[in-house]
Amino acid sequence: MLERLQAERDLRVLMDGSPNFLHTFGAIVAGASEYVEMATTFPRSRGFAPLQSLVVTNNSGEFVDLQINGRPEARLPAGVIMSIPNTPIWSFQLTNNDATNVAAGEITANISTPPLGADQAARINLRRQLLGR
Image 1 (cartoon, one colour):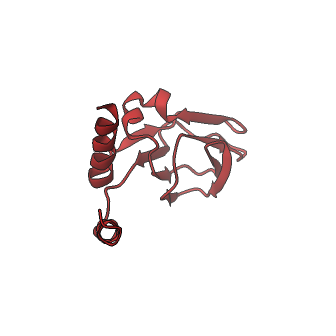
Image 2 (cartoon, helix red, strand yellow; image 1 turned 135 degrees about the vertical axis):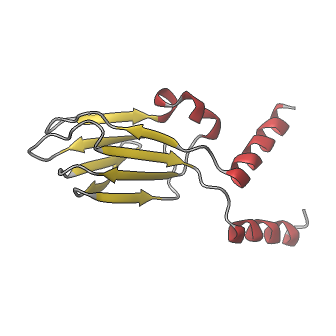
């Protein structure tokens, strides 16, 4: 019974995606960082874990470094929107390695799992047919 419920939930997330979880970063002084753990910051995200897409909008005038799941991912220049698709997101961190401070609200992150695309659904359906399921 539990396995069936889990399979139904997995299928629903696969077909419909997840809600969008928005995180607005607070002020980050020069040399400091802000850490976001999905399960703690967004308890509702546990039902969709791991989320698969991260979009960071850096409206500040500072360069920041992004880590995903404890691993360095990218350096975000000032005024850039960076999308990181198809990556399991359990946690992420922004570090301000610039000489000036980032003001509160200048950097946001949108985390979600997008719905299954038509081409992906067709591939899954074809694979199921070929395997006889």
